[in-house]
Amino acid sequence: MTAAVEVIGLTKRFGTTTAVNEATFTVEENTIYGLLGRNGAGKTTLMQLLTGQDFATSGEIRVFGERPVENSELLRRVCFIKESQKYPDDFKPRHVFASAPWFFENWDADLASRLIDDFRVPMNRRIKKLSRGQMSAVGVIVGLASRAPLTFFDEPYLGLDAVARQIFYDRLLEDYAEHPRTVILSTHLIDEVSTLLEHVLVIDDGRIIIDEDADTLRGSATTIVGTGRAVDAFTADREILHLDRVGGLASATVGKLTAAERAEAAHAGLELSPVSLQQLIIRRTGLSTSESAIAELEKSA
Amino acid sequence: MTVIESIPQVESGPRRTNRIGSVVRLHLVNKASIIGIPLMILGFILLVNIAIWAIIAASVTDRSDLADAQEGLQWSGASFYLFVYMMVVGIMAISAVFPLAQGFSVTRRDFYLGTSVTYLLLAVFFGAVMTVMAAIETATRGWWLGGRMFTAVYFGDGAWYERFFLFTAGFLFFFFVGTVIATIYSRWRVFGTLVFFAILTVLLVGLAFLATVSGSWPAVGSWFVTNGPTGFIAWSLVPTAISALAGYAVLRKATPKN
Image 1 (cartoon, each protein chain N blue to C red):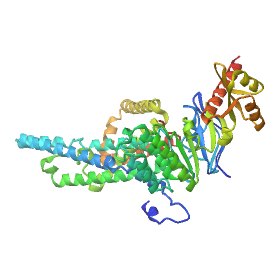
Image 2 (spheres, rainbow over the protein chains, first blue to last red):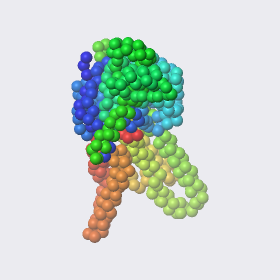
Image 3 (cartoon, rainbow over the protein chains, first blue to last red):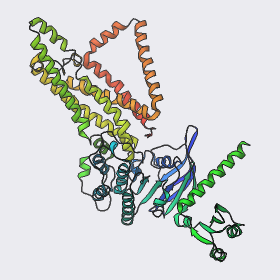
Image 4 (cartoon, chains in turn purple, orange):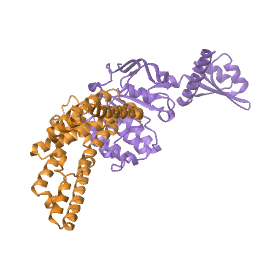
C-alpha cells in the first residue's frame, strides 16, 4: 500500500496556543480513517494544514508525495468542505452544486442529484437560512459526489437526523466499494461512525495520541464485570484503564487479554465484554490528559 | 474555459478543469446579484432622476433660470453608487468567495488570477453600459429634459472611447481597492484593517501638509486641469496596479477564518 498522506513532526502555533503539536502519522491510500478528538483538539487545523489552507509552523506534510500548499495539480485531487464552510451571502444550494463540478474533475452529477433528494436539501433557500443539518448535508453531498482521491468529511453528522445519518453511512460505503479512495472523517461523535472506520487517529490537545487499526483498537481492551473481590484478584497485577464500583460489584477495563487469561477470568466467575471505541477513546484521552497534567506539575516543581 | 470543457471526455482519465476559468464562473454563478441588481438599481436611479428633472422643467418657467438649473445638473453624482457597488463586490470576492474557493481546492494564485479576470470582464461590461448610457444621454440632450447622469462633469466630454476607458479604469480601481482592504481584513482582522487605514490617513494628510507647506496647491490644481478627467483616470491605474499586487501579496499567506 502507498501513503496518501505523510506527516512528520507537524506543528502549528497560533500565538501562544499550539493547535497541532509534533504530529507524525501516515494515512494509507484507499482506507477510511477516523480523525477523532474532542472539540478544539486540533482536528480542523490539522485538516486545513493537509489541504494547504493553512501554513505549518514546522514539520513536513506530503499528500500523494507532494507538498499541498499552493499546489494546484495536487489539490485537484483533494476535497475538504469544512464543517464551518463559509458561503457567499446570496448563495443557495443550487449555486454550490452548479459550481462544484467546475472544480472536481470526478464529479458525479447523478450521484449528486440522488443525494440531494435523499437528504431533502432545499435548493432555492439561502444557505444562511438552512438548518445545521441541511448545511452539513450540503458539505456531505459535495464530499461524496466529488469522488476526490482524498476526501475529508468534517463533522458530517452535525445536526443530521437519524435517517440522514444512515443515508450518509450507506452511501459512503456503497460508493467507496465502487470507487475506492482515501477518506478522512473527523468527528467527536465516535460511536456513530465507529463501524465505518478502518483506521483511527485520535488527536488530543494537538497531539496524535492513538494511531491504530480500528479492529486492533477494538480488541485492545476488555471490560471485566463481577464481584469486587473477584475483579480485584484478577486485576491485581494488571494495568487498569478504568474502574467502577457499584455496591459489591465492580467493573474494570483492562488491556488486551489472551485466550488463557479469558479462560481464567471466566473460571473466576467474571463476565467479559468488549469496550466500545468511544469508551476506549474517552479512557485513553482522559488518561493522557492526567499524564500531561502530572508532567506539567513535575516541570513546574 | 468553454473550449476545454467541450472536449469530449477521454475514457482513461478524468476531464481537466481550467481552474482560473472556473473561478471566473464561480464569481458569476449568481448573475442576479452581480449583474442584475446593480443594473436594476441604476435603472431605478435614472427613473427617479428623470422624474426630478421633469419636476424642475415643469416648475421653472423662466428660460434663464432653467438654463441655470440644468447647468447645475452636470455635477450629478447619481451614477457613483455603481462604482461603490463594485468596491463591495471586490470586498465580497475576498471575504465570501475566497473561503468557498478554498473549499473547492483552489490555490490562492489561481483564485487571485481568476478574480482579476472577473474584475476585468465586469469592468469592461459595466464600462460599456455606462458608455452606451452616456451616448444616449448626449443624443437625447439629457433624456429630453437636459438632465445629466452619465455625462456628469467628472466624466469629461471626450470621445466615446475616452469615456469607455474612464469608466472601465474607474471600475477596476474600485474593484482592487475593495480587494486590498478585504485581503488585509482576511489576514490581519480588525486590527490590521485599522492600522492600514491609519497609515493611509497619515500618508494622505502628510501629502496635504507637504502641499500646503511648499505652497504647491496651485500646482496640484493645474495638474488636475492639464490632465483632465481622462489623464487623471489614466494615473489612477498606478494605485489600481499597486492595490492588485498588494492584494495578492497579502492573500498569499491568508487563511479563511470562521
